[in-house]
Length: 179
Image 1 (cartoon, rainbow, N blue to C red):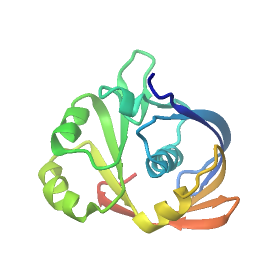
Image 2 (image 1 turned 135 degrees about the vertical axis):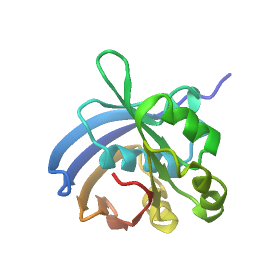
Image 3 (image 1 turned 60 degrees about the horizontal axis):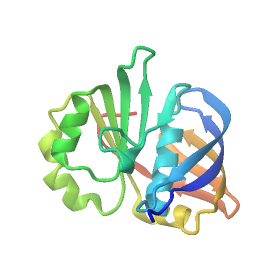
Image 4 (image 1 turned 90 degrees about the vertical axis):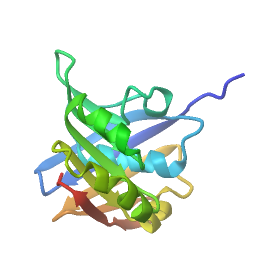
């Protein structure tokens, strides 16, 4: 019998001072059986960073032809493709050909990945890449409850997440392009 996805109820109170976005949203997101809590937390951070009325979660790990998150137009064109993790260069080029804009939220030990992958895709014009601080992401995602209540504030490029355990500063480093 196949393992089932685990649903997480999310309440996200977003205050993005940089873009002038203020919203309180509730949604359910599925965590794939092979997905870690860190990856789920990274997807939620990506949802806050690139928040948009049309932003939706893709099937991600279940379907390689879909991203972690995306924005599609009414006629089906992919306006913004958002990946999380450390995809290879071929994947990033493939994504860039299918969308008007591609963003990547990298996490983990990105030092080796940067030298092997990022340097080879610097010429891709519609790609922007941000890296999450691994220690901060680990602290935020450790023991992530099934009912997530986050208040996220973004100001001057800094990201702060407040949950039931307190406030977490999540440093972002823009490696290519910008938000």
